[in-house]
Image (cartoon, rainbow, N blue to C red; front, side, top):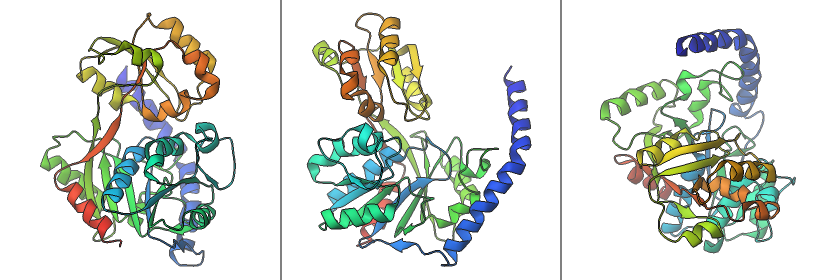
Length: 358
């Protein structure tokens, strides 16, 4: 059964290639205009770090942004975060505040605000990043650096450090431009990266595998670009709801349910299985899915009473919407915190690159 599916996918790739070439040509002209300075990319009033990818969805941007902010705070900087605010119900530049939610600023920015708001890290959203930078400059002139979340293709601004993320299992150099593949632009876009990070690697990834992946990336990277590797580091389940907090003791390995609205729930599911959990029910919605009362009613109807329900921190930002409070009541929902660990000497090299910005 698997082989016919692969053959069909291969045929679809070839059928869509003409459309991909047209789309890639348009993007190539756009990039050429920026590269030649005909269309101007504005620098920030402080150093900008761009974090993004060539592929649509699921490369691990959020935990890498968290790593950067935590490191910048350790280095004594005053960072801010600027995102588009995908999926929000508002428009225009906006600064996240206590009265906001995932609905008003987007799930990822709201997660950042919950993580770093008490540390004094401003979180802004804007479709036009120039306008977002203007807002940060007006409201938070103490900022010393801005991390641009998912802005690799947003070329109206020019990062001082451009970080490109790509999954080791689905690297950009093996993919095609939309709609034949999942790339937002051609592989040549990797030349804009100062650092390329292969994400979601095994913590014990062999040196030979790292060398092979780096060699492939360097076929498209600019000379001198840094190539790093990172793995996910999952923490113990953390209670999200009152029912989970009332359960008290840590969740013991056993039968659980998984509820997600992210692009790639596979790595989390694999981690849970390796930790001894049996995924009796899996509810996998589309990336940035807006959860509804009906969704949670279905989860409640299909889960056993008291069965632990795991979700991601990003999904938790949407699940805690006021409209879902009643539907969520009584469900023992836990988040699985995730951070990134840079392999070998990657953390030291990235720290040095950050310090070099100042």
